[in-house]
Image: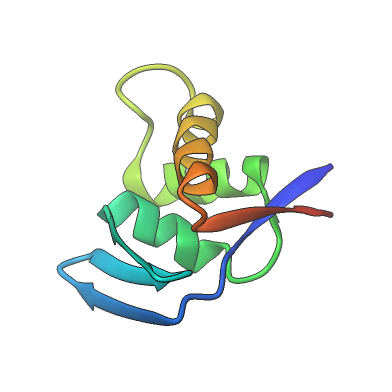
Length: 88
């Protein structure tokens, strides 16, 4: 099963639930949802685990399933280099 974890940032600034994250010389503005996902992924976590935590914290998504929406959000964070896939 594949898990994800947050990439260690060089620096982070949190304000109003959002964050600015410095990774590999690039600053990323991360939404409240992305920031929450990175916080939950301080160690390896599966998409299923993340979906459950997100649904508990934010309620069910307006469209699709929690797992589908979690997968979409994680893919964005992976592409930005803010999460990494790990064997878990």
